[in-house]
Image (cartoon, rainbow, N blue to C red; front, top):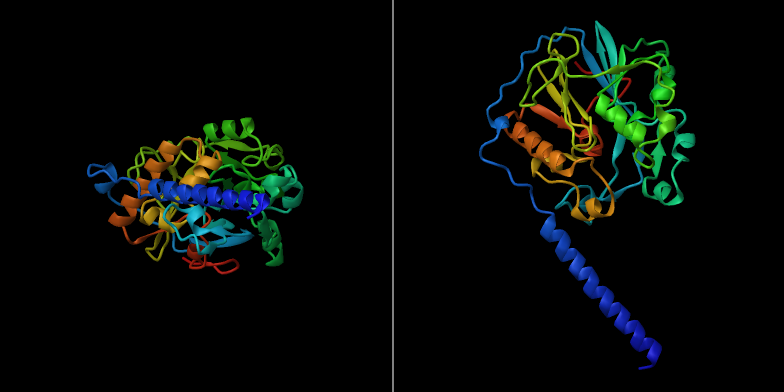
Length: 324
């Protein structure tokens, strides 16, 4: 065997060993999160809710990611299966005011995304569907009054539509705003929130709900309750939505990217978490995952809705359809 061939064989052999070692490391670390026997979520009760008869909600798909192996998105997931995470907004119609929970990507998505470097533009590539504003206009709802926009958190794929609603109040915890203002691409794109003129501090002024130590009952009737879920970011927010039909949904933001992460429970892949600075506080986020896991087991009637799970999204009403 010639020297070049021997060198190539040695390289392939060494690479094979490295790949095998990496696979073993991933399998070792991507185990279910431990679930303590004593946990407050095991003993909580459902909060009372009296939603008005004309409360309804819809989801508005704005874009979809190019795709990634499921094993990257959730520890223990299938590496042979490709998932395509979605970015969407939730429109809640209530007699006392309409809400947008997240905006997804907006009309200025291309200019905003250009703030990223070449590598990040490849890693976070997406296919645009339509901005919330565009979808409202197409249905003759351009003048729909919106009481507030509530970002689950201020990462780029959740607040791209803020500039499309310059006169609408934006509710966010102070810690979330501080992190965003100090942040940088690819997580935070300043062009998305620099123009907001009506910030309102979200301080969770009401009592515990579902084991979360504070809450914010938006309308005072239990129909829309905001919950602090920090970990992925400093001030991430979840939303418990109670419908007139009796159905309840818990929008869990980016605590996990897939429903499987809550059901197992499992964090995102160890490999991804080591390669990317993914969470503001990884330990806090993992505790939130376990909390949601226990809630899902205790209350199977609550539909858990992670912000990017395209399979869960497919089960929800899609604008212009609404459900109540």
